[in-house]
Length: 406
Image (cartoon, rainbow, N blue to C red):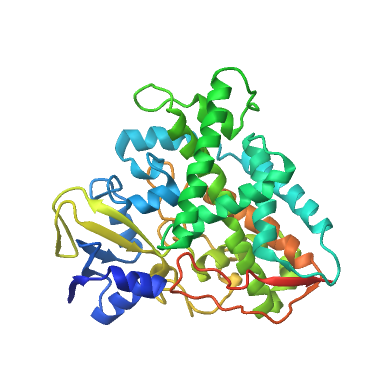
């Protein structure tokens, strides 16, 4: 294995999703030593590497997520920063709402909001799918979560939630918009939590607002209002981030229209289509953690405290796992069981025991529903910039995918 000892931080910003796969390709190995943010790092890829990465005896998350990412995407004190019993107890807050009934409820809320949105579309008047989806998802998830929002405020809330995702991996205006949006929404949600606890606001039974306000951590104490707001956002924000994939769905149906007809039937093909969107299109480039102790991986020394990076984008496009990986083909997931360590757009492993995103079933169900509805829409695609730059994190369709209803 060849090393890349010089600091790669600038190349990460310039190359984005292509950085770690390119670095591994240049060394001819799934394992590469490098430096990021002035720190030694080991880049890994593959199902076995994912199992190694998700073992808490090997890699821990505490102290691994950079402060700018916490100040925009996840929030300081979020479940993503915890390990061991503290992580499992906090994770139980999220898993308690990952039930078939809760998933169906969220899908129903978002589907109703989507219909309200589509009703407002006028023939020949162009709309931006990314923006329309973000507002429909916001309206649906706020209702599901039990968060009171006036109808006319949904657009502002959607803009803030999108900003938090859009600005986490960059410097400049996008990053500062994300910080301001998070500060604004944490203060608002923290106030709602206090009102629920003081009996001034009724949280719907079984809602995310109620669950967060009543949750007790491993120490037996209620979450402080700021941390409660952080975790409430970690229910709402990822749901709204599904708008990235809805725009990708418009892009995919435009490039490969042969999938429109089978997608209209919904069912298993819609789920397969959702999985292929998440595999094929870029979202999370890699995950990071810190070596919990002095370790070895495939004979390589991993010093305690050093960064360990798991290449998600590279694994989702690995020809050893996916035949013709740069071909968009939902049929690869029809009647196929997906291994817990193979498809990793939102992490790997078992969400009940590790750090895999517990909201993944919500994402898949929402995408299957919204993509099916999109396939039923009758629209034209006017000329626009449909490029997707891999140097931009998070990547997105540059135009947001403009469509013109018929």
